Length: 214
Image (cartoon, rainbow, N blue to C red):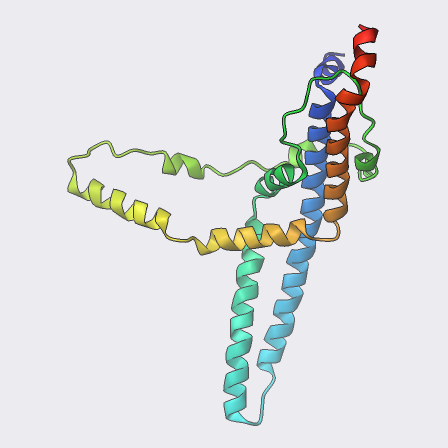
């Protein structure tokens, strides 16, 4: 009963956000698993091609270098996909669909038909949501001994590293863009956008009815 009262206390928009994020997390896991399997298959094919001999030594050297570059690229993508923070992807999807926009307070319930169609597996697995790493804790540390020359050098090196582009971060951004453009994710994003737009119009259309009901 207490759990039901707690759910009833949420606004319609809060429920939409919770439902949408749960579905986005679930579909993102499926897409990531698909892309990981695809990368494994591509690596297997490339390594098989690399093992095949070529009669012309010059051509083989050129081909092998090209194949090794491709293998290295897919190995990086494979490793990045396995550790990709899906919570960051959900955060980007929330901004993209308008879920993070402040909504007018309303007690009117939305049925969310379009999003419900995605929930074919029944209960949601909230325990599967991943949390962000504790990277911010390291960045937030301050130098306790400013008079120490060693500490000063470490601070300068850290600032230089922060200013430099991070290849891993760029790869993560690229992979998130690819996942958000996947055919499994795009229809869900479109459905969420439509529901957000419907919520934005609903208070103006039903405002008089809501006041009279009070």
